[in-house]
Image (cartoon, rainbow, N blue to C red):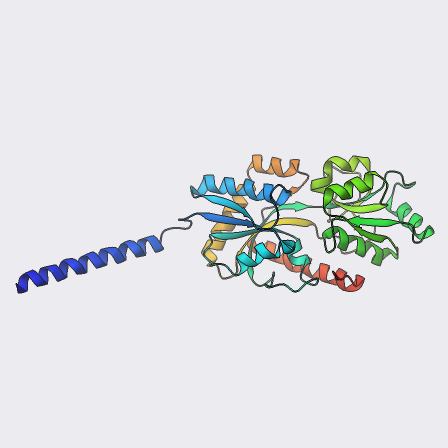
Length: 324
């Protein structure tokens, strides 16, 4: 009886050790070993959604793990961003967001800190803006536009995609730096803004190069943001070339993990993202959208975010912009 008892105890112990070993092996399995979810804090159908799905598909093909895209829109993108910031830091819930993530810092009270609660992975695409004037205006260059607006105070306007957007901040900066009195007219998105421009209801607007590329030839193009001219608009000078400051930041689409995510996971995710963004077919699709492919390191992206946040905070402060 005693020997039987000892034998059973030994078998039970071996079984327990085997189970523990299997559990440990599962816990130590190489990342990723379960489905990944991209949270897009904007509605389906836009450029953010399209880029997220393109990267997700390439990542799924490479890692042989399901990578799904979930649109979690609302509150200017803060609902989806907060879900990731407060979610599990295991590398399986990822934020795919835009430059608004840092533009919102001085404009609203956020339930998270964009610069401290996320681990930047990489920019996926970069979106320059183009300062465009209505086709019916008797000007062709930025100096001519400035001279005209100053000669006709209270008459001219500048449109945007909505309060607090890049177009709004860039327009406010133009007023501040040149002494213009362009009236800000917000629209609900790109389509109505472009329609208003073509109809002569607006004097000017900063148009997102990606979503407005096909319409740009219809307007008088006065300058582009960033530090270099665009390859497909080589005759349009940068605003920096024309003596304006703080137009270096451009719009971007990027990937983020919660800040507490283990560094090896962050590094692996970043390396895979950079690999995907070097693929010729991916770069061609991004460029066809009027965007510039991204693909820098986490450290470089973190520097971009910090610099952009400082510049946008200064614009908001100097122009006294509020969302009230």
